[in-house]
Amino acid sequence: MEEEFLIFLDETGDHSLRHIDTEYPIFGLGAVICKTEWYIDKVNPMFDRFKYKFFNKRSVILHSTDIRNSRKDFSIMLNPKVRKSLIDDLNNTVDQAPFVFCASFIDKLEHKGQYVDPDNPYDLTLAFILERAFFIISKNFPGAKCRIIAESRDKKENDSLRKTFDAYKTHGTGQISASELNFITGLDFVSKKENETGHQIVDICLYPLARTYLKGKCHPSVPHFYKKIYKNPKNNSPIGWGIKTFPSSFSKDLVKEIEKNCI
Image (cartoon, rainbow, N blue to C red; front, side, top):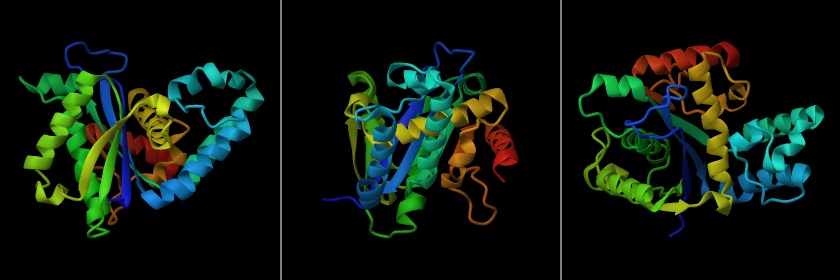
């Protein structure tokens, strides 16, 4: 079966509640949702063109950490002119690529402080992404199918994610029933070295949102993809639609800061 949609998952931070980095106390899960046809015919060629322009090869992996630190292939960014040109082109490519973005964040300190036995942040954020996928795909394209492609971690973590995914598919998320999740045909894992464009787009979009929250200042990349974030059609707000967080004030503060720069 060829699914009409693909969903790419990637994360920022770690989901451990045992040892929390106070400098980066959040876990975020992001998703790029794209029509399969558009992903193959438009998205991949757009990012390949960008890579050949700056690196003369498509094997370069767009990893936000490497970009920020001008390391590995991105050492060319140590030249200020090249850096500006590359960042401008990358933002423009993201801006023009056809996809929908959604993300869920957990402030782990708040989460752990509120519950005696807090749920795993990955499980909570995954439920939200599955619910968003239902509204974005099933509500707008009845009968359409999709496949989720997660970036592979180690075997233990992959097995844990599959177990959670299977549980949601069997019992629902609490907000969406199991039958309403039938449009999702399966979950695959792809390693970073396989150079899947969808995961790189998630990484490029997710980290700036996390930094915007942590710094209280809109990251300069956010305005270039803000229009991609799934929003409430009534008030054009992404709160609870394309961005969901715990605690809820986290969403409001994050979006308030972003909108000062994007609207």
